[in-house]
Length: 245
Image 1 (tube, rainbow, N blue to C red):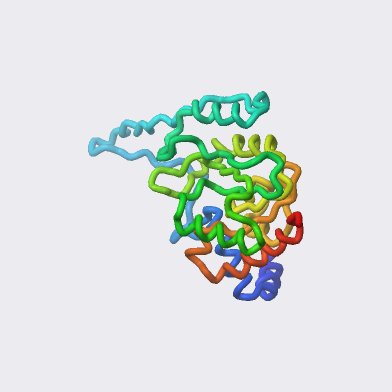
Image 2 (cartoon, rainbow, N blue to C red):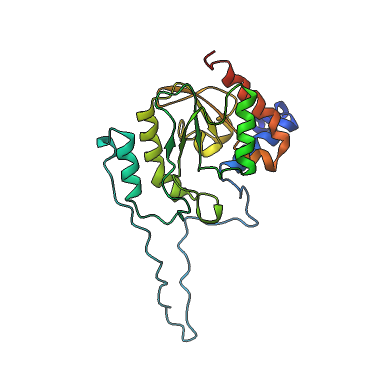
């Protein structure tokens, strides 16, 4: 196994390694190694009081209850939007309505992202420039966001958030029947292949909702690490090869 890892490390350039690491960070894997080994399967020790009696167990706050919805029975985008508007989930809804989807069904291009971009933000302007570089206006593609509302304070999405709303995004994609998808970020790309390593989702064609899909870095990642723009440009060129004339 060590020999295989050593051989693999010799085939990666420093740029390849940096790109793969950035993709893992973008997917939320920000603690690859801890300072000390952990016994994850061991029972947690029970704290004792001064009298050496077991302390009362801490009571965790109740998890937010999200009503189950039969998404298979929802056959229109308007009904899907109504189902979302009726949900109670602590994302911090700063906007007036849900932003799960926008644009025309069966659009030539659909942009899939983790959460809505703030209008006129640096991220939104960068995405507009990326689309313009392949001859597409920012308002032209359809859009689906995994999280229908920006998180409170624009905090990174939690796994529980993704797990809650990903079925809605997948149902929106099924109803919109896009012809071509551009996924922004590791979590958006993972909707196509949930069990794949995040670093393997870039640089090749994926498939989602019956449409071919290209995954690239989210605009926020490109703003933090401009050196990744060359990789993003290669992804956009791959997408442009299949864009309708």
